[in-house]
Image (tube, rainbow, N blue to C red; front, top):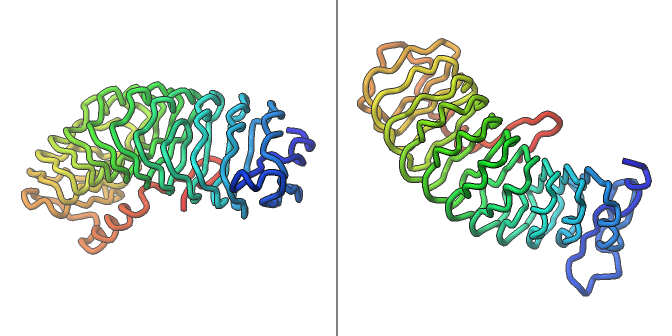
Length: 313
């Protein structure tokens, strides 16, 4: 990206129509003062826009959706509000959109953000973002079922839609997400069981399904699952599968029975709240630590470190 592009008004934000024609905010990027939201679409070769942690205001201009080569758009912690432009789904090259800690509201036509006030059903148009790698929509007011089109996101490696008002079941087609490494579906009003096809998700290393009203027996898990398996406060029954590669196994407050498999000393296991389980080995953690860990996981299960940035609050 040339210095000329960096010096120009990359993003200009206005609060109301009456404000058109006069600046509303100053961006610290090379001391540039925003003056008009229209020219941004004239720079069609832009691939990255980062205006995070600024004292901006107003809404996202619709014409951002015309940047056909945009790959990264970061607007987090910038005081923005209003809706997410419907034409975001037209940016087929977009692989990362980070906009947490703003005041966005309304439906999600083709944008991705969390810790806002987004509501309504998830749109299948999100699947048009074929280069998308990270989708984080947790702690909103989204409703309805997970669109089947999501399984077309063939390079997605993080999916977090926890703590919404979503319903339905986890479809067996979730196994189509072969690049997915971290899956967060905690705090959702699901029905039914975990599909057996989840064992075919060859890249999955972390699975968070606590407090999601799931039931039935725990199926075989992916062979690479190693960071955490959280199935706490659900309705699972039967035996605990032996998964020795895990670092954290959280199965508290279910209806599990039988003997607890023997895990290595490096595995933190929480099985409290399962009166029919028989632990014939020495617990790897104390009850106090187990309770503390469960509370910590329920608050911070969504915190994930990425290659070049941390996307959490």
